[in-house]
Image (tube, rainbow, N blue to C red; front, side):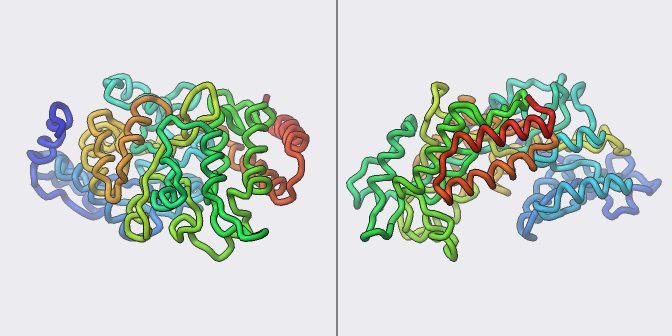
Length: 427
């Protein structure tokens, strides 16, 4: 068990005053004071949760802050993930944007451009950034300015059916495996009955993950330059097409229709998966599973795309100091020490990274995720640029069409790249 700074944060939580804070919106306007002599206020935080259980878990983390700060009541304002960015902009236009805001990377630049987010640079300068995992603090920056802090960060890895590997006599993959080794493994797992494939090597190698593994992306995450027509991007998308149409190791859309998970049903030997999938695999898989990092196809070694949650402060909040106290708690302080157990959210502070190992359903090789978070191989794959959602949708649609029709890749990719540069004024 770890001690030191993490233990001190935990002791702070345990030793926090249990004086009851004032609840309800009326408390914010009350002239009365709480037990610690401070005027009670209410902070609101905007979140997305598609189920009541998720909202409940987030509130449990927020309530831990309230125990330390009984004069502050915290209320969630929730929206569905798909409608979230539009809801934020609507609330901002109406002058009722919450004090703190979860932000989706795809909408981050738009929120900044509209002046919705507070510049946190001065507050962040006072933190010991060595407490954070490599690359975390930069995920909250737009053009070098700190507009958010990261609450949790993770990535997808390759889950595999150990029983299927054993039956096929295939060795389990190593953490440093290559894309060539992956492809040979996928071929060995694939079973055909005449022209019909009855077992696939992989359920779906997602486009972003495949591009990142090749050390490339649709757009450069730092410069926002279009890299759709870069040699490594073309190579990755050609492989995507070949996995479906030439090697038949990955199913077509038609072959997966009506099936929720080929991996869980035992029809595919490998699948993209994050730690949020582990408990479902443990409960519902009729086989033993484990994980391994994505195979490497670049001279940069193993790379996986970051999945992360930035939280920002409303630039117009009436309570900037208290909002920062809450944000610091969630992204740097005591909230980091409890979020893994409560919400299965991967911490971003070094002292708590190992908490991943105690996640529900954690597989034998869960340490591989810890290693990736600590060694800097979990990387951003999308720039903060307001047109990213539309650009990515158009690229995805083209790739799906190319895969479906099994037509040459390079020409259409170069053509679309030039169209995007001209239309959006990009390099």
